[in-house]
Structure formats: structure tokens, C-alpha cells
Image (cartoon, rainbow, N blue to C red; front, side, top):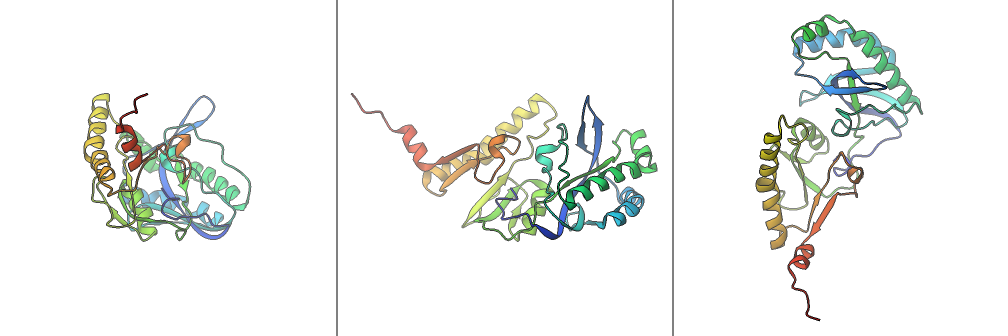
Length: 264
């Protein structure tokens, strides 16, 4: 999504990472990161205070965005964008690259934060309440906006999509079924299918997506109101690039489907 909105990775200078608090669960040979329940303002202040010496040593700062998201900011050289939460959460964590100044500093900072927050009173209280401790941060940087994009509106995707759209100066609507932009492309983000609580609920969500999101777009495609309809799964290999949609439909595809075969 960041690629579609015109974000590009800088080679040097100040950059911002989305710093999502996570719980780390050990596997056989790796760690798996999971998002945690809401961190209250009092908990956040205590965690950030405990992390302040480590942040100063790394030359980094933590800040709150206008959306209430945690942001890590640092001036460094090299590429350390990291995988976005939509790809990495709930899966075995890939060993980070240690190439470049910024990658090494982030790795050292990540380890230091885990040590600073281990047995921290906030985390001990959260564990007693069954809410999951904040073991570390999931860091992902989309880069800086300003690259080529035809996107005029983003629909759905929650607070992260709003964060990306606002940073790129693009209109955002909360509902995936919201009206598309009058001109230009519209990106629709459906995040409800990431972790449905039950099989029955998954069927309900799929039916809602089909009826409320996909069906109107297909009708617009057949009428010529849309030029292209593209479906991208960010967790699949096909969805790992700006031009790698899992499924792309054009109006001619529908016409070809309904065209009667010629007689021999």
C-alpha cells in the first residue's frame, strides 16, 4: 500500500518508523510477534521512561502521531524499512539484516528495549491481567511520500491506512465500502479478514466483502465506470510489489467471459 501511495525509501536522513508494541512468543527456533491489547497512557509513559536511556544511546526518539500511533524517529544512513505488520505479525520473525548503519543501530536498540522492559512493573501487571506484556517494538518504515501515484483516496484499513494516507496527503474514508474518488485511483483495504475469531465469523466477513465491497466495484467495471479492478493479498508472494497484483480484472475480461464461442 505504501508503494501505491508514492512512498519511497531514502538513502539517508531523518525517517520515521511505525513502532507497534508487540508481545514476543518463543517458538522452536525463532520468535513470533503478536499485537498487544491497548496500552493506556499511564502504561505508555512508564514504558517510554524506562526506554529513554536506550533511545538516547541510539540517537532515536519515540513520539505519538496524530492518530495515536507510536513513531520512532532517527537520523541514519542505509535501508532498514522492515516488513510491514500485515506481513510479519503472527509469523516466525525473519532475522534482520545487519548491513548498514541504520540496520545495526535498530538491532541493538531492539535488543536493549527487550531488556529494559523485561520484568517492568507495567508488563508484570499486564501479564497478571492476561493482557499480554509489551516485550518490544515492531518497526516498519514506509519511507517518505512524494513518489508517482495516481491514488486519490484510501478506503478502510483502520488507523495504519489513515496514517499512511495522511502522510501522503491523500483522502481517507473509514469504511472499505465508501464511495471511491471522483477521479483517480481508489485503494480499498479490507483488514477484517486477518484474524477472524471463528469459521462462522469468517464466512460472514467474506459475504460482507463480496456484497458490500466487491459487487459494487464489479458493476462499475462492467458499466465502464472503472478501468481496472485489482485484488492484492499482502501476505502472498504475488502481493509483494507495486505491480504484482494477485488478480487484475478489466472490462474486456468480463466481455470475453460472456462472449459466445463461434461455431466450427
